[in-house]
Each structure stands twice: as C-alpha cells, then as structure tokens.
Length: 256
Image (cartoon, rainbow, N blue to C red):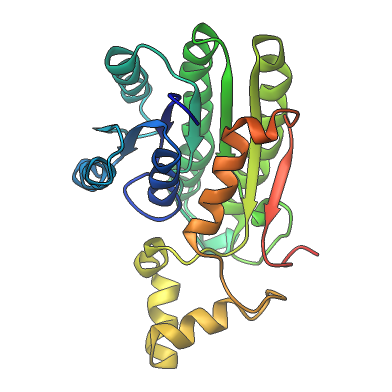
C-alpha cells in the first residue's frame, strides 16, 4: 500500500476495525472513522502503537456534513486520499408487515445512503489524488433472500448496482470501485441484535448460537473479520489492478 491514504468507515469494530489495522499494517496512512468516536480513537491508537500512521474522527455516514468533514480531515492531514473502504452498516430482522417505515428508512439510510454520500464526497478527492480504489461492503444477503431480512437485503442488493454504476463513472479517472459480499461474519454487532440475544438464551451459550447461525453455510462456520479485511486489502491494492465493478463473494458457500 506504500504511502496511500485510506479512509475506513465503521472502523471502531468488526470488519472496519480489521480493515483499518490490515491496511495500516501494509503501510497505508489510515483515517479511522466511526459513529463511536471513542472506539475510532482506540483503533487509531492501536495502529500508532504498531508503528503505523493514523488519525480518527467521528463519522455518522448518514450525515453529509460529517462526510465532508471526514474527507477534509484526510486531505488536511495528508494532502490526498487514495482508498475508501465503506464498511459501516447495520443488520435488521423483522417481517415486512411488522416493519415500521422509520425502521425501513433507518436501515436504508445507513447501509445505502451512507455509501452514496461516501462515494459523492470521496470520488472528487480520489480523482484529485490521481486515482485509487473504493471498496464497498455489501452482503451475500443481497443475492440470497431470507425471511425477515427485507430492509437489510434490499439495502445490500441496491449497493451491488450502485457499485457497478460508480465503477463505470470512475473508470476514466483511474478509480476502481468493487464490492465484497460476505456471508455471516463473527462481529460484535451480532450481540446487539435482539434475535441473537434470544438465541443465546434459548441455547444456553454464545458458542451454541454461533453454531446455529453457521448451520446454513457449507463450511460450517462464520467468517472472521480478518478474512474480510484481507479481501479489502486485495481490492484496495494494485494486486487487483484490473478489477472494477466486480463482486467478491466471501460466504463459505452460502450462495453456492
């Protein structure tokens, strides 16, 4: 990654955290962003302790002004921006007939609008920096439907075509745009979800809950955040220099 500058969203935990650490490990200067500013600062501190270069700021991906500030933060500190890793997102499960309009809009606001705003404000910065790479975390749920996941699946499916459209628009500016579609990933976000909490109570342990969640995956486990981070590094680097508008499915065989 050399001296590239990367902005990572949702980097306070889970996939985003793993991505920020992995990119920094390969030499990137990383702006760690998250809605939880304290968590972002903690990850930035960890990067610094490992000898990397980093900074942190609060970023609510649904806020256009926050996006403007985050991009400007990177430009003010390092003078350029080469990589956007859009990892922020939320999961949500509820039958369609029981989902309120506010709940629907909240999921699409974070998962879809948040990426649109990131593209809108990062693309000019990457263009002015001579090009680069944008990596968007979609989901295998954007390919394969599941009862109760209407808002989540709709948001992740929409990202697939948003990424392809952005790839076509960005190609003349030497900016590549690709998507990663993970299956289940073992991240702290699961623990905040009511259905996971109920599953733990029902089965008696988190270990049993994880096992149940992975039952539909041929490899019989969930991914580790670091496995997705390795794919982000690949798409952010010149190792994937002829890839744009592509979808990298990392789901343990879930959609096979």
